[in-house]
Structure formats: structure tokens, C-alpha cells
Length: 468
Image (cartoon, rainbow, N blue to C red; front, side, top):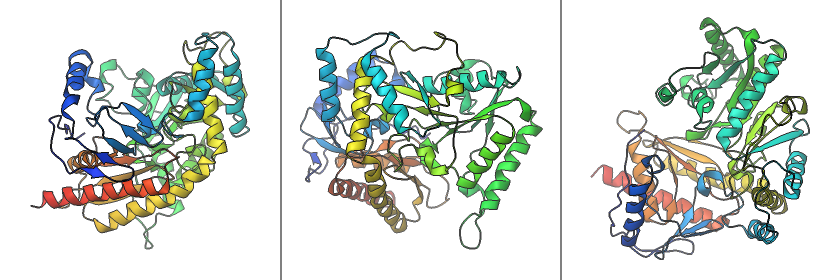
């Protein structure tokens, strides 16, 4: 991580008045310091570190502060508002539910919950025929670990090993932290679950390409086999594997697994009678040009974790899976206080209707072609700075490098994010060598181009300033 801190002192910047972006004050605006000071005084610092923008209102693909400034949003509040901020259909559904004066039911039945669950299962692939609702993505991944182990124990009491990939982001609760394979970030737990094993993510730069610049299928298949042999040497008994959990793409860099690697994993899982779970929390609901991001691999998982874009607004997550696995917990033994409440379910049902009615999965794929074409053009323009462009659909990441050493550069992308903010564009600041991009799927083509223009200008200006 870079440790870069965004400046909270108001700075004079060029005024912006495009059709979609407006910067009319110093950035951050002088009045915003009162809010930042209050947050600094009363809130844990773990919530801080984002771009210093005070959100007052957000509509569709734009974010407004109280001081007259307007940004194009390339964050979708980190891939939640796929159907656009304050979507009118979602707001209408919430108003109707508020008028009914039913805001919470715990696990007692309510109509919005039944209607949403039916819709969710109906749009999912047929083999994923039951669902369970929760409040946050990390709850869904914890639930997946529980279900994989419960199912493993129906075969053998010791079949509880779970395999994940180092560097993946599965949440911040205990099992989710250990799934990352980062011993530093999970040191607070005080121990390591001996039945959680971490494999190295198959980054493309770790394997040399062939004469045509591409890595062959056989190379990736061998890589998977070698990774499994390595785990076996560390003491893993394949008979004890309950399942694999994969982030559908590596979150920080929008890196998808090589398809042959995942297909080999699926073959292995079938041969050893273990499950496959995809953590699709960041990638679901049209973000990558398919309804679920895992569908790019052409395999059938047993469980899928969902969240973020599931409701377009309110806290909701889910796990969907095969009926025989989802029904393993005894009645009443797996529940979540707030997740199935009528407000969240009403919003989520409306959200799915918008995705269908506006054909947003197809739109994401179409606009994604534009986004990735333009980002690769910037990469070609600055090959000494931009090392890779990854992602699919309206999900992208640009990875940056030090032009002298070629090593990952965490400071340059942070500076680009700050400059873009000053120009009326919000990007996902990762604190690493990457910038992530994910506008609402409803963004017009013209606004997408305008945002890319601001990004390109920011890269050019920071590059120019760095060599002066």
C-alpha cells in the first residue's frame, strides 16, 4: 500500500464546466473541512482515506457536493449502484414499502422477501435453485465456508479443508480474512485455521508467453497441477478438501483467472468430490458484461456469493446454490437479523427489474468495448507508465509502473486519482499500483467519453509534472 494521503487543504484548481462535470470551487471546498474534522474526531480512522469529497446528492452517474461541484462517478460506490444512483424505480419501490409501514420482520415472512427470492433464483442458472439472504458480502463468504464444510462432513468428518487464493478480498470477518492468505492483515485473529489453504493467484506476468505473446492452455493447466502438488507437499490431503472459493476476479486489479486454469480446477473438484464457490460480490449483476462474472469461465459452481450490486442501494447480500447444499443447515440454525427485511428486498426486486428492462447486461458489454479500447489507447500512449489494462465490461483496472525500474508504482495512480477528482471525475483509489474503474451501467456514451478524457488529462499532467 502506498500510504498516500489526499490533501484536505483547499487548493485552487482550474474551473470545469463540461456537460457532465462541474468544478466551481477550490478542491476540497473550504466548507468541507468542518465535516472532515467532525469525522476525524468521532469516527474510527479505519473508515478514512478516500478522496476528500463530501457527497450531498447522487443521481444516475453523477455525484454532487453541497458547494456546487459535480463529478462523473467511475466508482458506482464500489460497484453497488450498477443501475445508477437514486434509480427512480428503486426509490418508488422504497416509497411504496414505507407507506405500508412495514420496515422489519426479522425472519418472519413478508411478501417482498418471497417475491425477490423467486426473482433471484429465476434469473440465476438453473442449477442454482435456492438462496439465503444476508446483510454484507463478508457474511456471504463466511456462509459459503460453513456450507462447504457441512457438506464435506456428510462424506467424511475430516473433509473440511477450504482452498482460496492469496490476495483475494473476501471480506473483513475472521474466516474471510484468513481466506486472503495475508498473515499480516489477519494477525489480529491470533491463530491460523489449519484447514484453510491459500494458493498463489496465477498472475500472467509470472509465466513467460509464447512466440505469439499469448500463454497456451497447456501452460495454465500445468500451472494448476503444480499449485496443487505444492499444497500436497505442505501437508494437504486431497481427500479432506471440502471446497475451493475463488473471487471471480482479483479485486484490486480486475484480474480474471485464466479460463484453462479454472476449467482444470473444476475437473479436479469433480474428481475429488469437493465444491466450488465463486465470490461474485464485486462482479455480479451485469458489471462485467454478463449477469454474473463467474460466467466468463464456462463452469458450473455449487455456490455463488452475491452482494453490492444486488440491491442498487441498501445493505443486502446473498448466497445462491444447489438445493441439496443450501438445505444442509437445520431449520432456524442459519439466519440474519436484517438481511431479509422488506425494504432491502423491495429495493433489490426493483433493481433486478431495471437490469432486465434496460438490458443493462448487454449495455455493460457494449460500453465495455468502448471503455477498454480507450484505456488501452492511453496505455499505448504511456507504455512506460501503464503496464496493464485488465477487466471486462464496465469493470477495468489500469496498473502503473515506475518508468525507471519497471516495478509497481503505488504513488503515481494515487496522484492521478487526486488530479481526476480536481477535474470532476471520481475513480476507485486502491492504494496499490492500480486504479479501478466502474461507472454505473446506465452511464451515457458521451459521459463515459468525458470521464475518460478527464482520466487521460490527469495521467498526462501527473506524468509531465513528475519529469520537471
